[in-house]
Image 1: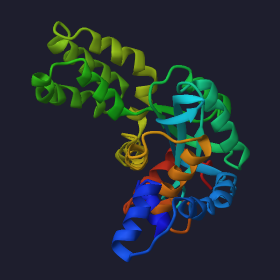
Image 2: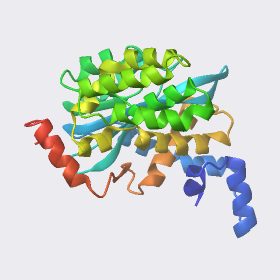
Image 3: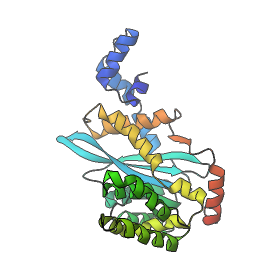
Image 4: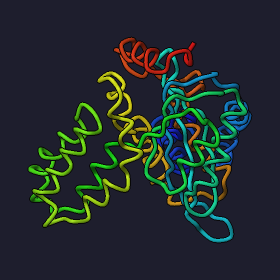
Length: 297
């Protein structure tokens, strides 16, 4: 019960109050902390477990948590989710960094994942962090680097007035549903002809992200459906934020890691952090096997 309540975001004091109110049980905060400390060995084992040799897709992203280190500072927590050949969503690990999110630390994270047994990744889906493509290419030279299309669309809307969003969404859809790069480029020109005068920065946004966007257009609909967005990892991040919001900040890095790991464990009681990716995974797997022939098996 203590571990379950902690994973849902309750603080030690709130867990104590809940047990007293619901069960008439007096449990000290120290006892509650000791109970949750029992997962520390599990965290170390989980964080260092061997990984699959290959993942068709890996999603990477970072969230920010507040940790007291002399003073309260914002610290990035790096997370990676791999979609296995069996179609399972596998949370590969959590890494607490320092300063802001950076490509240099991502290189350390990706290298650790490789050292744990992942020799190849077909597609890495990420945001547009500067330097990140180089870090991915250094780790897995054959990996295709795919900018999250949904992130690109959201950033487009940020540059536009809300009253234009619906019309803009209709005009933008032909760009990312185009049959190939040439078709997409034509559609983007048409989009810019309509909206460029009002929002000139949008064309530059797409031009800067173009090299990481266009690989998406080479894939079949089954692969596009999997790689369209980082919703898988954003859903996990939403759970992380819900669990960390009530605390305000953590006393140390270990406390933050423990809290986030309990969220991961709540998704899968076996503690491996795996969930079924999608019901219709087999068509996507066949598409991956054809597109990346000889790399999955």
